Length: 148
Image (tube, rainbow, N blue to C red):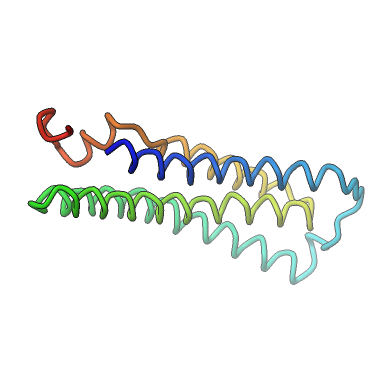
């Protein structure tokens, strides 16, 4: 069980590390003007696509994962149950991470503040996905005798 939590944690912190590296790279380029005009058709379209992606992906990732945990609880084989949980957790993290990294990158291109808000929402959503052994046990309703 600890190896599963470790793998999920690596993905979790990998997303935050990628976010920090992207922000540092953007800061180091020191471009003071927007590369993409936020009021242009392309700028507006990219911003709207990003916001729409965030509006759909975050509830879908969080709610879908919750619904899937109900199905995974019914699996008798504990190793299969844990493997499905790991796969679902990583997919959930990647979906939210794409929104986070994408909105930061598009902010760099257009300097549109609504994209920073999108990044903040995605970063806060990731907090709800932080892996822990206790969360795994409660999500899958594992008995304490089964965890060993």
